[in-house]
Every structure is written in C-alpha cells, then in structure tokens.
Amino acid sequence: MARCPDLIVLGAGPAACAAALAACRRGLRVQLRGQPAARPRGSLEVLSGRARVALAALGIASPAGRTCSRIVSRWGTPDFLERSSGDEPGGAGLVIDRADFDAVLLAAACKAGAHFTHCRVRETQWDAATPVIVATGRRLPRWASEGAQRWENGVVQWAWRPGRSALCGTLVVDRLEDAWWYALGDLEGTTLALRTPHAQPATQWQARVLASDWLPAQWATVIPQRRPAGTGSGPPPRWTAMPIGDSALCVDPLTGHGLAFAMESAQQAVQTACDGPHAVQAYADWLHARRGSYLRERAAYLAPPVHRAA
Image 1 (cartoon, rainbow, N blue to C red):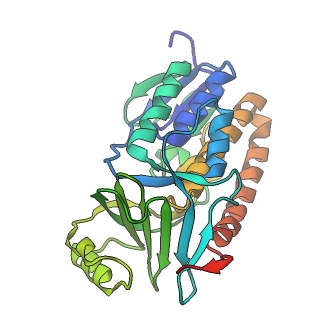
Image 2 (cartoon, one colour):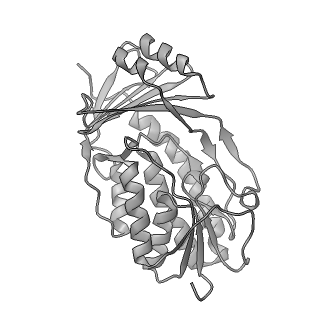
C-alpha cells in the first residue's frame, strides 16, 4: 500500500475480515494484518439468521449449509426441551464449517481491496491519527489491552466424527453442574464440544461421555482437541484500539451469537472510524448495550419452548 491506510484492522478471522470488507466498500484504504487460524475440518458452528442479515449488508451471500432447524436444550430443566429456530431474528441459521467460512471471508476482503499482510501482530502502536480496529480474540496486543477487562477462564474440548449425522440440522445444548455440552451435526458429520472452566485430561472427557444419558458410548474413544473458550468482555474502545468480535465480547460460539456479534461489531466500528474520534463514545455505549442484550438473547435462545422433545 503506497499511501498511508485510512484504517488498520488487526486479525484475520470473521470479525476482522468483515471490518475490512465494510471499510473497503466505503472507499477506505484498509491494511489488514494477522494470522488466519488453522481451522480443521469439522469446526461446525451456527451461522445465525442475524449473522446472515449482517453478511448480506456486506454483499456476501449466505454460504451453502444445512439449515439449523431445531434447538434441543437442557439448561436448568430436568428434561430436554425442543424449539424451532425459525422464529429467531433473521430466520433460521445455517450449520457451517469454519474451515471453509473463514477462508471465504478473507478472500472477499482481499478482493474488495484490503491489503492483507500475513504476520503476527507486533507489540507496536501506529500513528494516533489512524484508527485501529482490533480483532485478535482474547490475545490482544499489550498496548491495546489497557483498561478494564472481565474475562472468565474457559476451555473447549471438541471432537469431530465424519459421516451423516443423526443430529443433522440440530443443535443440542446440555448444561451440567460445572460445564456444558454442545453437539451440532450436518450431512458431513457431527461436532461434539465440552466447555469447562479449566483444561482437563482426556480421561475426564471419557468419564463425562460415559456418564451422559444421551451421548453414544463411541464418543468416549475419541481423543478431543482443545482450544480457549473463555467468556467475558474486553477493554473499552479507543480511537487506536477499537475491539470487535471476541476482542470485545467472548460469547458461546455454537449458539450462533459469536458470529452475529462479530459481523455487527465490525460494521459498528467501521462506522465509528468514518465518523471520527468523537464517535468512539457512541461505539462504547453500543458495546455496553450489546453485552447486556447478549445475556437476554442467550436466555431466550435456551428458554423453555412450545413443546417438549420426544
């Protein structure tokens, strides 16, 4: 990029690429810097109807995917409860594989004109006159992490079994005393994830599978992978460090709230960059309100439905 950028975006995930894409469509010169995460096949997630609406606003058609038509949850109830996802904001979501989805968004951002540099985000700051959007997840650069943060520890152990899933188009959420299961399936396979506060040995995964009243015993023989999955909120935004996506608010990914928040916060931050430094407080107010609404949305997402599952 011969001239100085109008906007710097740190990160290479969905939030970062959405911000770069939105900025390019507004005619800004965008420098996108980061390392794409190596998402293995079977990284299934729900792309909610709300996230699909935000994608459409960026000119991106919804990807191919199985409709996530059912939510079956046991969240503070003795029995599993079932509800349709068709009444969600924006309509029903899709079951997508992040191994494909992330690459599509990065390609779209580059095609729109973002100058992408594959690199680690360095511990340096840029000219204070240039707005910086931070989308590096919980691993914020040291200079960008100043201010109050409220992170809760969390680890996800997850596994993938190929083959047409018995849960095709269904999301299952089962809350335990100190953890919760997520299961999601499509025509290609099933993703099973256990979210716990701290890392646990594989034997604990096996014990929890065998203690479950709904998981097939075959899952106990799988060796799960691990990745961070803490929840919480990041630092308040500044002109040179406006957090979006997981850098601003870590939410439960499989319910569809993670990608929806990534898309929406990206567009809000780009609007702030266009409006100028005086608009940062308005973005901070939006983040505060969005954090509160997330808790209400998740409660509604897992609320007692119209009827019980068979």
